[in-house]
Image 1 (cartoon, helix red, strand yellow):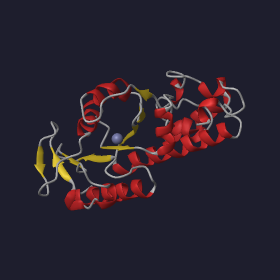
Image 2 (tube, protein in one colour):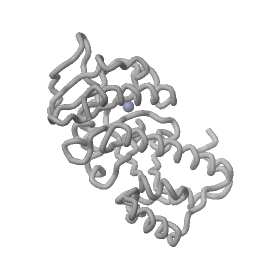
Image 3 (cartoon, helix red, strand yellow):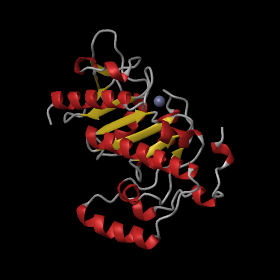
Image 4 (cartoon, protein in one colour):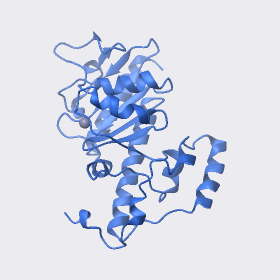
Length: 243
Ligand SMILES: [Zn+2]
């Protein structure tokens, strides 16, 4: 894929993130890896609604700036992005945002380890809550690193969400699926409870999608980070959802 196309994809995703309400003010960041081993990243201090191709910054694997428009610096969270590329050869794009449904889980200190939506069980797998790290420091990449090998989507405690993919659009789709799944689950809890899909039906779906290659690798390890919180709660509205 040529650089201009990747730049346009990043801008398109940035605009969608803002339109979807996943970011406010200067929140969020998007990056992509290029064939020559350099990276494109969104600038710090700019709304995702204003990103245009010439504002994207080209950096090397250490975060050094190679090309930039005057006065622009790469995202302050670029260390988190670079750690994803360093640890996963299959990752070519990283997206960070604060989608309100998924971030609600991160603020409530809850992983998304539910068996309630079959397509998400198959495509995303379990979504861990990674430990809190001070934004823009190496605490954040250190906190996510243990989860990177098994997960394409993660929650950042008291902060937001992170998605990686083999290209910009795939990373975006994963964040989009995460957010819809979070909203559906919150709605189910408000309506009285979220119910598990049987192990038998999960295995049937996993078997079917393994032939098409869409099944996430950690779908079979689904209880790894299990809190199973929704199924341990009373059917009525839990107190912490009242406020
Ligand atoms: Zn953030």
